[in-house]
Length: 286
Image 1: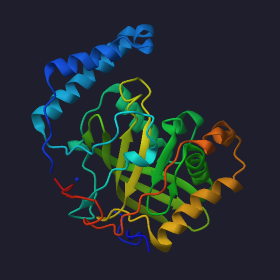
Image 2: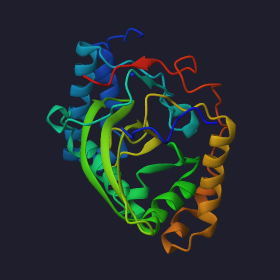
Image 3: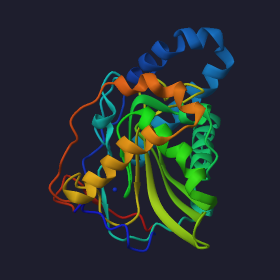
């Protein structure tokens, strides 16, 4: 079975190197003279200013362990998987502690919350790269076409989905991470389930400094374990994502049909969803 228990109450240290001022400046200059920067100089300056502040905060705080993701967008989504186990399955958010985000980052989070809330649109699904991966306790979708099928299927399965609250706990060059609390009301069964989870959004290196940021890997963990990507549980997750989209008649899916041929790698297997499965233990309760 997939080493992640969906029936549980649905409720991460390597030293970080400090970037030098010259490195930050040279990196910023390359982005500053890019085509989008020249087209929209004021917007670009605002985004670059925020990201310089993010890097400065990372270098002084040193609290976020780097994941070591690829530096290029050419790497497929599978290489951007965040791995972590937790000291507790309690992911109850405290909005008063949420990290304040820049405009582009907040817009990204707003779109993801809207997708969770059964409000899919083509533009919101475009928040993901064509070779993205979506990974939760029920689904493993390894391209944007399959992911679109999942988002556009939600309103057919649920009468409503309401975001009760969320708390952004990490925001840097690699990840936006949040605790999320969502209430789901089924269409056929008059029952509402409220679930908390840890949502990790791995950022696309090419777009993370732009107005429209995209996601390479989206992981949603509902308890303290990570996913092993093995066993019958995982086989069902992948089968579900591979097949649901085949039976969808939403016209919006045509927008993403070309993503079926997106760059992919073999699924990474870990043997276990526990700490030994390349998933360092972290405390998310503070």
